[in-house]
Image 1 (spheres, helix red, strand yellow):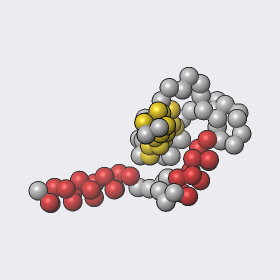
Image 2 (cartoon, one colour):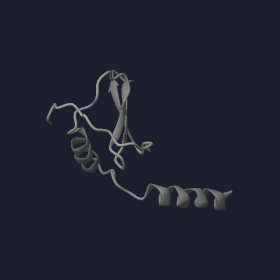
Image 3 (tube, one colour):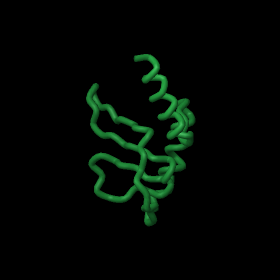
Image 4 (tube, one colour):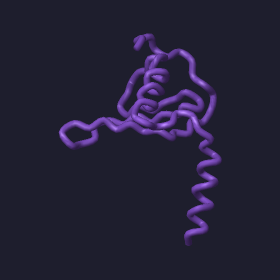
Length: 88
C-alpha cells in the first residue's frame, strides 16, 4: 500500500456501512468506519489523513472476508425496515 497521504476528499455525508474493530488482549483498541460509496473513512484516534490507497486495500480485504463493499444500501434498509414492520 502506498503511504502517500490522501489529498482530495469528496463533498458528501458519508454513510458508514462497514466497521473494522482492532482488538488487543480481548479489548477493542481502535475502530475504522468505512463508506465505500463516497470513499471516506473515520479512523478513531487518527490525527492525519489516511493514505489514498487505503480504500483499494480495504476493498480487497472486505471482499476477502466475504463482505460487500458496494451495494444498494438504501434498498437494503427499506427491505429490512419493511420486514421488521411485518414481523410486529
